[in-house]
Image (cartoon, rainbow, N blue to C red; front, side, top):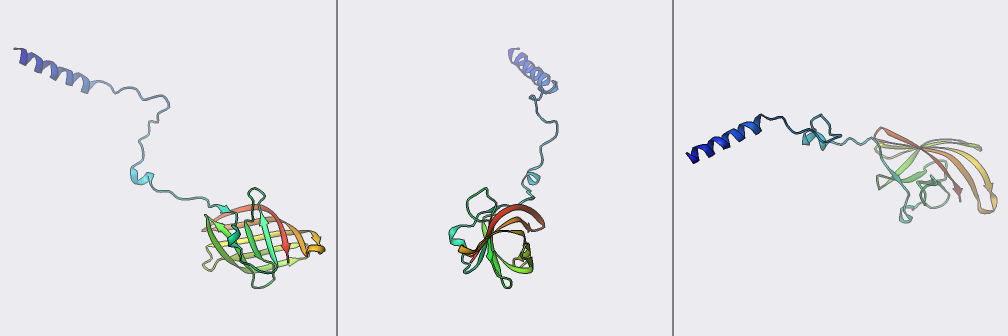
Length: 165
């Protein structure tokens, strides 16, 4: 009889625990189900990062326009300071990217220059105002914005710097 009583007690215990209400959720827990693992692994980037150029990056000779955001040491964008055939350099998501001048609309007061890589996945629009000129060093101060578009996402950054020959 002891075996039968023990078996009945075990069955009764199972019946009670399986029919009881679940424990309350911890405070702050969501009532929504967690996403499936395949959904959680999908990440659609909505931005990109620009980082300062490294010393080894700049192989441009002659006149150069060098622009910085003033936050990190170094330039975000360096380009030939020429009217035709200019090339620019920047780092997007850590990779060095070379862009070529597409349009040039400048006056003595400043202007806009547009650059793009060969595949047109990256465009750079440099909109600058001419500042103080320094004849002794053959340079001129510049300020304005750098608008970079990468795969359809655009960032506009205030920049300062200048052109030196």
